[in-house]
Length: 508
Image (cartoon, rainbow, N blue to C red; front, top):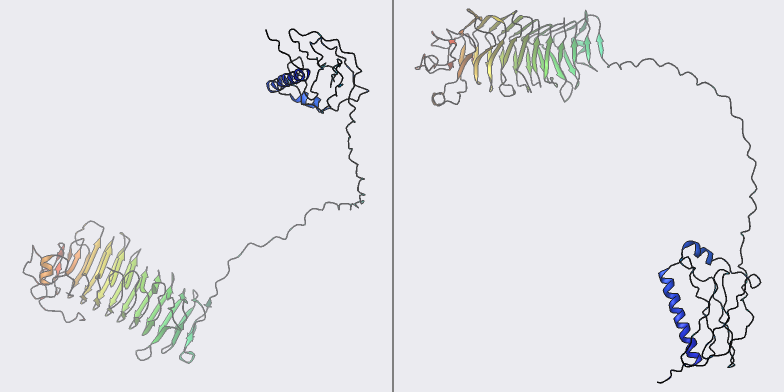
């Protein structure tokens, strides 16, 4: 049987490799913990402090010195991970003589002695024991600990503290007076005042008020110029008394339009031979609220508003209202809340640009317990696309509608009422009126024959003795199919009718 012979150098190399492989395997299986890592980083004691451990050599077949890597340390017996080496120790040189050389091991810590590794080969004679050699420990310099040099404290400047003043109570604020409304600039006429022809033209500087108890009398021929946005208010009396050849003129000082003349409760306004032009910026050029308004022989032309009366009494006589732009309402709007009188005689109202369906004249009674008395005579009312005369009532209507020319528009007379029919009501006399030339409704027979609506009513009314635009009388499909004049409503009594146009009714 062949005998395997291993040289000393080969045995040392094999032992070193086996030991190294075991150390790496243990390091992988048991990584170092934090406490051991901290302990490993602790500086190694000097040679004077270390305890030398002499390891007896083992019996080998051939004298093989023990070569231990000093940078590998076995883990502790409590199976805790071993920390990395603190420092690499130099490998001890071996004697070149063939004599057995003792293996010298270094212990980094007193607790962990490092055993020697010996190998035996079968058939080889044992070698003599190694002589004991003194233990050598590497001398490591102690770690240099650098202590930071404390900086001298910066000199501090003494801070002078000022004594706090004694706490004073806050001074009382002055009491402010309550805010007052900013007065609107206005000129006030407080006594009876005359505007004469020698002063003409008179230009208002700002809104002007005729105070209660005062009066403003304007003589014939005076021209009053009113700047844009300015109005004349009346709490007392305003008498503009012109003449046929010397009218009083209210006109605009410049464009755009001025506001208007407004009578307030208890006021009295009389305009005679007066021309009103260029006003009505807000949609109303003449108004009276629970006051008296009388307009005679006057012209209200080229304005942007209508005439409106609410309350007491109203008289419009021999006047002309034409060529106005009316954004809303009738050309003449009369509203009664507690009864009153309305007199319209000899006027010409037409040719205004009105909102769709608006009438020339509208008279409204809002109180079912009070009576409105009408006197509507010899007026020429030319419609646009609404009625010529509209009566709206929740109460009683009395008076007369006589000798008027109700021409053009959608309807001649329109009576609207929310009250149930009562015998003899309304107590109106409606005769000698010329009702003609109204727009036919979209009904074939009406369109074919050019028949418009002459009158409509929610209650029974008596309209006998009127001219309906044709000698044959009004057309009524059930009662008078032979008629060719404007048609009356079902509740309108029309027979007998006038066969000729009445001479008292003004013509267009």
